Length: 149
Image (cartoon, rainbow, N blue to C red; front, side, top):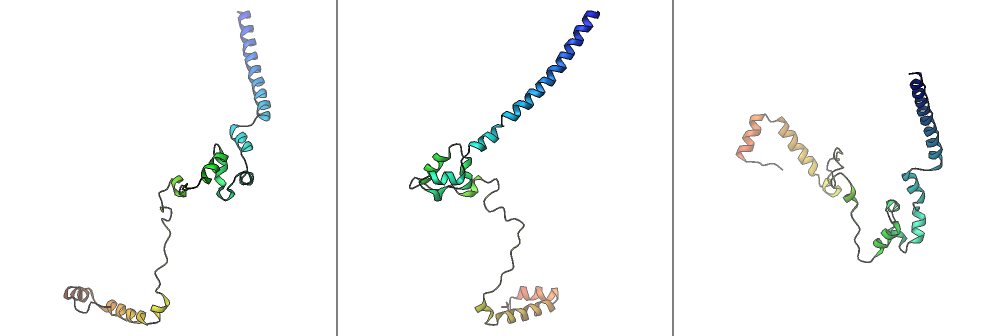
């Protein structure tokens, strides 16, 4: 039994030592190697370098450097007759749905219409309508006389 205990203690010690050795090895390897994303970012060309290498530098955009083959993408963009893909196709929101919650300012009449004085007439009729009771408003609506301005 003593022999079995000593071997199990040795096994557990060696397992613990192996774990610490593995941790140290992992730390050394992590210092020497980079993650895939960091490696891709290192080998990715800059926008300026891509503009220098391309025949049509005006077609290079900031997100073109993240393409799998940026040079080929710029070549395809530069072929005559190609149509660029609209920017909203890559977005998750539907087209023009991002303006929800933004209030529009009220409509303002152009200056040449304001100069005619029509605003004063409209304000006077609005005051008259405000003075009328609900019965009078319904009567005027049903009769149809004096439809207003």
